[in-house]
Length: 173
Length: 174
Image 1 (cartoon, rainbow over the protein chains, first blue to last red):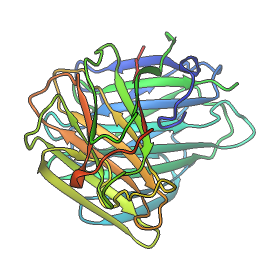
Image 2 (cartoon, rainbow over the protein chains, first blue to last red):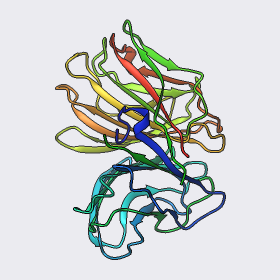
Image 3 (cartoon, each protein chain N blue to C red):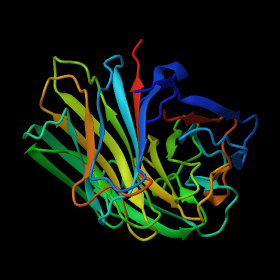
């Protein structure tokens, strides 16, 4: 099911959606129910800055509890990066080209399991007919708490009008 | 928070004979994102690759950026002002039935009439001639309109093999 597998329609539920009517520095899904096995966030968004870093935090945790890395293509080169003990997780990049929206499919596995850290995986990118990124990102949140809120933000600017964020829950058997 | 079941199968096409293209038309605008899934091989031309096109637009309104790995090295590239979005940018499909390629294509916010459309695709080929895995981000920059038709076809004049199944799903946000 994750990232587009075919499953029964009843196992994939829409939980919440936000579409911005004006700019916003961040977007938060809060009070996330614990009744699912996995979460997926689907993003269609613009930043106010070019090729801005796309970041997140869980449960409002701003401590150095995120270990993140990425593998990406710029259209001319391939690169990888990684940061340990970071205060933010990695979701890739988000651009500011007019009418061009960056997208991301973010999977958060076993988000209510309190016996292990939480892993977040993202397929992300944008193409602007001459620039762009294809980005694979992942983050370990080094905290065993159940995820109850997710905050998304571009690191260098704000989300722009028409940016849209949708949270889905995926049930186990 | 509201909750509602989604990830709805909208249409499935299974080929009774090899075909050069498959079209989903009259797509409902009631969903937020579309997901297209197919897994097959090229019945006639080694190296031909699948591509996607929207609303019968054959002009150069498409571009795409890719990240690709073939088991030995990783590359990235881009095509601009194209007449389609490639769903395999580097690796091509061959004509071996035991070595198909798979695609999961996310067509995001497809019904909005305000912005260009962005597509995320993950493709994998485990075959011997053209091995590889790719992530591709595509843009359709026609004057914004809802996507109501999707054409999937092959470069190099290939055909999708008999029995190939293409399934289109809709995901509706709360």
